[in-house]
Length: 158
Image (tube, rainbow, N blue to C red; front, side, top):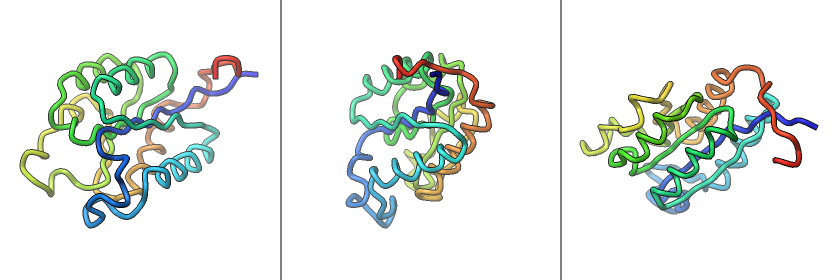
């Protein structure tokens, strides 16, 4: 049986601390709660997600490269790497898939060092400042940009 390719939802450093880390900025939702909400939103569109988090830049680069063959779209919260990583920029630029940059907070309303993104210039769009809703809007955009779920993988590959 063939399944539609998933939307990769990739999360960068310190997002594993959500819910406890600066809730006045990032909210009270844990990363697990965000994953559950994203999976439910994707399911509304007949899609699945592959939700991952790493504190390591190279791992995120590897996952972006993996997405090129195993995903229909990517939702990327590169966290602090958004503002520092040319490596993530280059890996994301090589994608031939819809890429949505997502942030829980609004980086433009925060410290000046957060105002520059290495991801935004190559992303199809950016959703920021809406907390958990940012992720849900990004899932919706990724689904719309990816088109009907026609790209498939067999259950043996899943």
